[in-house]
Image (cartoon, rainbow, N blue to C red; front, top):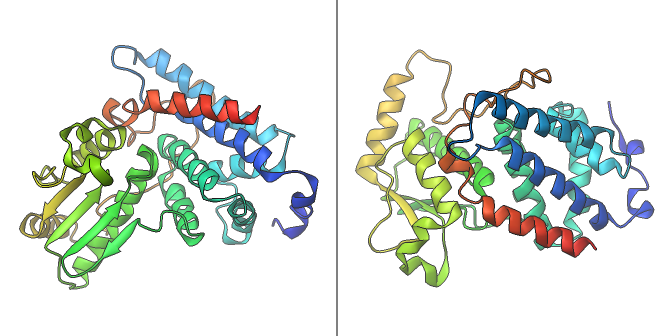
Length: 303
């Protein structure tokens, strides 16, 4: 068991911000290797090499002596802290991060959720997202009233957005099974502000990640409405049909989720392939350019 003595004095030993930023860079590098390769370059040997490189980076985090934060986050990604008694180590890092402000917090959680999603650690990603919301980040994420149930992912990257949408859909399905009335509209918010009026929002990275995810994993009934280009919606009749069909098909099954969130096993070096539930270039490569730009900005800010 890991206790407070393992992290005591951290705040006195260094400026936390100086060590969070390198961890963010590690996560971005891991994500960029583990997400889908560009079309035409996805030969099995090349994919396997990229996955080996991603896992080597993760192993490098575990042995990094620059700070305990590297090791805690690396071990969390691999599942070493899943037990509730050990998770307090992760919570301690998240609590200290809160003091560094919202901007760094959003960037940190986005990169961490990206790495977890593309490494196939989706259940762990859902737990991390819950920790982020407990600390006041993404306050707009889940909204619910009689007319609309929404998930707002406009400040998230692809991995975090798909994680949030999965949680939202599973919660919606659970409420439906419990007999709650469905809203008139279920909506995913991908863009806010003036850009809601422009059709080019469909080409934004977050829209290009979430729209195919909804179509592939739920239904093509989710669509961009004519009256708002920053929303992906599903109306009540179609939503009820989707949830009812899922309920019928899952009768007698132990799986009571609309979207299954699991942690894929970590395999041996040289035998690694992408997790079976992580696929589709449309989810991974859409925002590669923006990730590269963010990486450059981060590295510049660290000088």
